[in-house]
Image 1 (cartoon, one colour):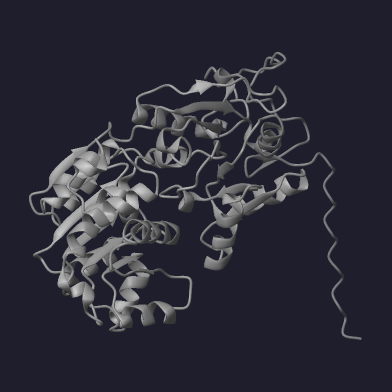
Image 2 (cartoon, helix red, strand yellow):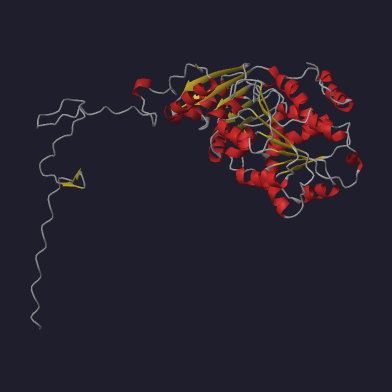
Length: 447
C-alpha cells in the first residue's frame, strides 16, 4: 500500500516523498489507519520493519491541524517513552524528519547529560516529548514537566522498559497523564505478562501482530559456532580476519566484558570501540558516528544497542555471548537485515550456554545452523561436555563398595589410605614422622 492511500496530510506526504519512501511496510499500512481513527493500539512486529513511522506519522497528522501549534507557549500534547537514550534520540530524529513541513516542535529528554538545555526547551514550549522514564520523572518532580494536556501516549519497546525495572516510574508517569487519551504500545516482542499489564493502560485496544511473536527477520542468515569459552577471544579475531564484513556489531553480556573484547581486538590489529551504560552520552554519540562512517570500527556493545539502533548496512551481528533472555536474541540480530536487506547473525556458544541456545530455538521455532568450528577453538564432543562448563564430565562411580583389591587403571574408586598417613578433615596428611613431644622443664628451686 502506498502512503498516499493512508489518509495522511500533504505536509507529511511531502516529507515522506523527500526521504524516498513510497510504499508502507505491513505494520505501517495496518497501524496508521487504526491510529488515525483514534483507537488505542497494541502493535507487535519484527524489529526493523518501520514501527517508528507507524506511530510517528499518525501522531503528527493528529497534532498538526490544531490551532495550538501557533501558540508561543504550547503544551505537551504527545509523550513518547523509550527505554534507552539512543532510541529516544533516534525517535526524535524521525519525528523531526517526518514533521519538517509542519509547525510542530519536538524535544528529547534523557539522563547522562546536563538537564538545563532540556529544561530551556520545555520552557519555550514543545508539542511532542520523547523521553526515557528516569530523567522525565526527575524533571516532573522538579516541576519542569506538565503532562495534564497529553492527548497521545506512546510506549516504544514497552517490554524492555518493564524488563529494565522501569515499572514504578512508568506507573507514576501514566498516572500523571489524563485518562481521556489515546495510548499506543509498540514492541518487537509482546509476552503475555506485558499484555496483561498493558490491559490496565489501554482502553479497548486494537491488537495488531504483523508477524509471529518473537520471530526473526527471514533475510537474516543465522548460524552458531560451538566454541570453548576460554578460546572465544581468539575465535572472534579468527572470524573477523577471515570474513568479508562491512559493518559488524558484537554483543557482550556485561560492560566490563565489552571493554575487554575491545582491548583484545585492538591488540590483534582490529579497530574496535565499545558502547555501554558506563560511557558518557557524548562518548556514546561519538562512537555511533564512527560506526556510521565509511570506515567503521567493530562496535562491541551490551544490550543497550539491541533495541531501536537503526544503522544502515550492518552486515554482521555476532553474539559473543548468548543472552539469558531469549527474546533479546531476536532484538540483537534485528540490527542487521533491516528494511528488507540481507544480513548475517552468528553466535558463539560455550558449553554452559547450550541451554540458552535451546531456549532461543524454541522461541523462534527454528533450528540454527551449526558451523564448523576451527579445531583449536572447538568444544569437546557434546556427549562428554558437562552442563556447567567446557571441561569433560567426570565419570560416575558404579556405587559398589571396594574391599581392598587394587583398582584398575582409570578406575574412579577411592584408593586405600597409605600406611603412616592419617585422615583429618576428610584428607590424608603428609607421611612425615611426628615431631617428638617436648620434655617438661624441671621445677625451679627458688634459688
